[in-house]
Every structure is written in C-alpha cells, then in structure tokens.
Image 1 (cartoon, helix red, strand yellow):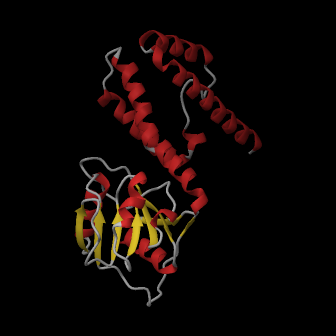
Image 2 (cartoon, helix red, strand yellow):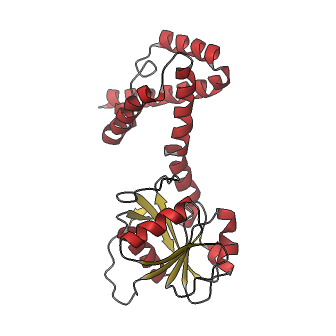
Image 3 (tube, one colour):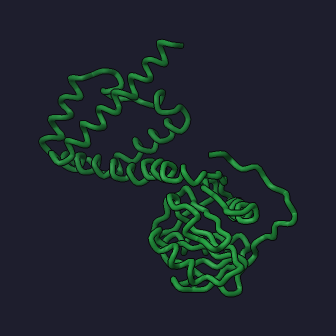
Length: 255
C-alpha cells in the first residue's frame, strides 16, 4: 500500500452533492461529518435509495448487502462503499470507489480527523474522489490494492476489535480480585502510547519480557483458578509475547 500524493488535476470534477445509503453507525457518523465540512448530503438514506440528485453515492451497508444496494443506484453516478475487506467488483457496472475510515465508530459517533483511510477506485476520477472525500474529513488516504484488502482489514481488526476482546479478558480476571476497569485504563493508555512512540519491541515490559518464568507460572495458575475459560488465550499470548521478546533480544545483540 502507499500513501497518495495530492493530485491537482483540474478536469476531475469535485463532488458537492453526496448521498449516503445506510442508517447504521458508519453512515450516520459520515453523513454528519461531511455536512460539517460543507457537503450537501442526502441521508443517511434507507437501503434501496437510488441516489437521485447526487454527484456520488456512498454505500454504508454490510458487506453482503453492497451489491444489492448498488443495483438500485441510477446510472451515471460514482458509487462507493465503506468496506475494508471487499473489492470494487461488487459495484459493477458503476464507476466505483471505496473509502474505509481506519477508525472505530460507536453509537456515539466518531472523530475522523487524523485517521487513516483506505481508498481505491476503478478509474482515476473515482480514485481522486475517494482521496478528496478522505482529505475533506482530515483523514490520511492510503491506496490499498485489491489483493491486499483482507490483510489490511485483518490488521485493523487486530488493532481495534481484538484489543477490546483482550481488555475484556483483563476485566474478567481483575474483577475476581476487586480490580475495576477504571484502574486498568491508565495502564492501557500508557501502553498504547509507548507502542506508538517506541514500537512493539521497545515498549514491551512485564514478566515474560524479562524472563521471569516463576511469575508467569503463578499468573497462569491464578487465571486457571478465577477464569479457566481464558487459560487457552493466556497461553497463546504468553507464547506470542515470548517470541516478541526473543526478537527484541536478537535485535539488541546485533546492535
């Protein structure tokens, strides 16, 4: 993948009128965000809308519904989707593009400014539109090749969705001994900031990282006692953390 350079081509028309189809969290958040930066937005509209009166239509629907939603869009409009893992073939015969904000969106909405955005287009005009939409919201557009989209989306899921699953496990174990979420939050925030600044190898701390196998064994026994269903997850994470620590140690020795 590569970050796109600014394109000053003047014969690619700008999109001023944008229809958003899909009334879920992403469609609702994007409609509000584009309105705030000056777009004339129709929607979010229900599935089955034809995008009449718009320059482009952005489909914010589940992946399995993209092709069906695209069938309702009138010919002549650029049509895009917000899926991270789906290619552009589902938008045929439309001139298609994709715009996937690399940002978690809850029922409370999202702030897209500063986030990455995976984009693609079937034509230079469609690609330029996707780039322009991303930059209008302050996002950093990155072009993702069709074959790379599943790996891109897997990385996003690990970084966001699986992190929540991991913190839920920490909450589950902590709750057994009176530890509350609010007490874990500063630790999590500091860890993410260290990873951001230092990278994974230098940010890694804890008993596995320092080779304290006796402490790891006591932790494992405690997990087995208070949340035995989480023991396989704990074991897999210890194995992966040992591998990361070993890579760090090799790097230090080679320096």
